[in-house]
Image (cartoon, rainbow, N blue to C red; front, side, top):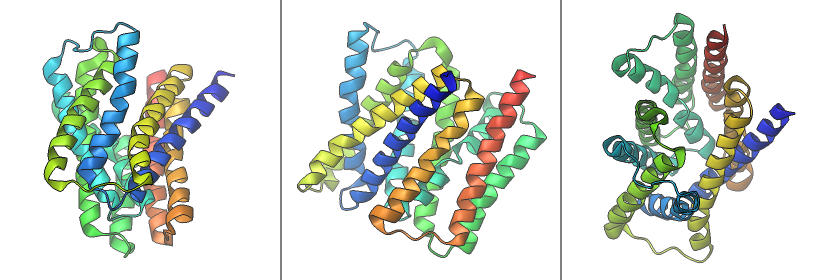
Length: 282
């Protein structure tokens, strides 16, 4: 029964994130900095509301690490939003998901963690998907690819910073810091790059924060309901939903090579999750 609940929560979460990705793709004429600003500012309504309602100290205690998490996170988010303007949305999302590879490398360097040989094999499998996408799929824009790969590097750093913060801070406090830093950064960078949204674009810009918030909430609920090994692989349903939106809403074309590359990326990362959980449970 619990696993059914977790699956339902994760499907809602991945659909919300896929809707956010599709909205970013639709807002192709709006500056990426503005998208960061609106996505973050509208989320603050939820995070501040939650913290006040539950009387949770907003400032937390690990101020430097919380601010650093915000800075690294907003860098990753901005570069990802920029990449979506140059890549098909499904490809951009798939490439962003290689962040755990960089996180593992940073964990070896900074946290002195050990990576098993079989995990490196899975990482090589996932990264080979990137090489297939760039080497064999002529539709992949080089500039967009560079942007999303750098975004993934910064996303990997986020994992390490959150790991350092540990359980000393409430999860919503961490998210709130991220949204505050992103709102300020996006707002400042938008000043000289402002493009006036038109009509429905205003609604979609505010909708970004709603999609992002509910995606985060239901993902958290899923992880709280069932074990990581049962839930984590379901995160990649987001890629399927996003691919579908790309095809049906934007008329994107995915070649055999692009689908093979995406399958290698997701396959390698899912295998790594399952392997890690088996090791933990043995």
